[in-house]
Amino acid sequence: MPRQKRHRFVHREPPISVYKPAGIPLKELDEILITLDEYEAIRLADFKGMNQREACSVMHISQPTFHRILASARHKIAKGIVEGHALRIEGGRYILADGSGGFQCTGCGTRLDMQKDDGRPCPNCGSKRIRWQRWNRP
Image (cartoon, rainbow, N blue to C red; front, top):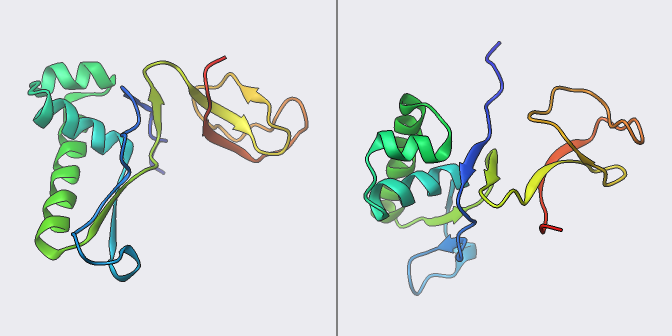
């Protein structure tokens, strides 16, 4: 059984979440999902020009993991451009740099101080419906 993926640190969510070919309605296009950690890898390596060692340090992941994420993101973007698909940026296991996110019980809304969802129930209501949520900083 593989171990659970760790959260990757992401500077911020992208200002635009969908890119598509011009002139074709989105409902007529196939979509390719790019996770926020893949977006962050592209931002750091290709936009900011960081080398892999610097970028993996920023994201708090190993260099081989950064390389795999970056390769996956580049492949998805190339496929979207070549085949004319829409690119949607969302999801993944990430922590925003400003700390505005974490685990939360979807049953009662309690924010939980956890590093990973290890199957424990919510201490407040006993629900096992624990999800990663984005929230505004208090």
